Amino acid sequence: MDIKQHILKESDQLFCRYGIKSVTMDDIAKHLGMSKKTIYQHFQDKDELVYILIKNKMEQQTCSMDDTAANAENAVHEVFLAVTQMEVMLSNMNPMLFYDLQKYHPEAWQVFRSFREKNLYQTILNNIDRGIREGYYRETVNRELIAAMRVEQIDMVLSPLTFAAGKYSMLQVMAVHTEHFVYGVCNLRGHRLINSYKNINEQ
Image (tube, rainbow, N blue to C red; front, side):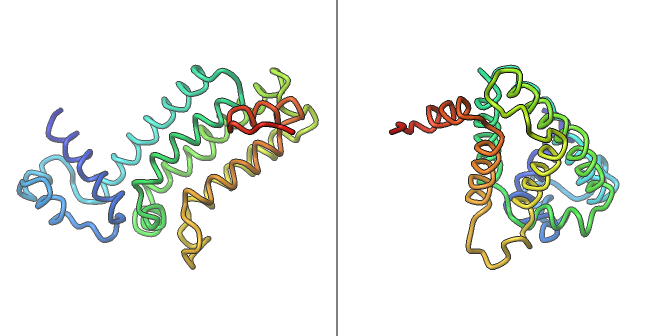
């Protein structure tokens, strides 16, 4: 791994742990055991570092979603696999990360918005179409509206302001939203499949 990629990787860990705003370039340099001058040889400033990091992560996430769809047994299985991946991501993420991104790094935020409005939306739409073809999702669902609503659900999970009282964790909110989504789009055959993945014995 070259120095630039090493800086990005370690910065990502710091941002996920503490949020973006609270981590300074001094903090990054100290964590890496290198001078700020070395970091500035690869990044003009913190804003550029964050922009490149988010751009790389969104590209990786797009590839990950494609792989998940390709490896899933069916549309319902794809949802469960995607949630498992998100649980890993959310378990290591400071709730303020996306708030900081939106408020202090507008160009990087636009990269994330473009990802959610195009890549994420299309992935969800493809999943709905797949579920209908496979006979697990209801044919009468409004595909585009449901896909847009699912994107908004995921946004809600990532927003620290939605549940500011701290009563629920991001993982809890994601689990409830996902169950609401997948049970809502599935027909009876799909419900049975969901329950089999959840190891629920139907009465």
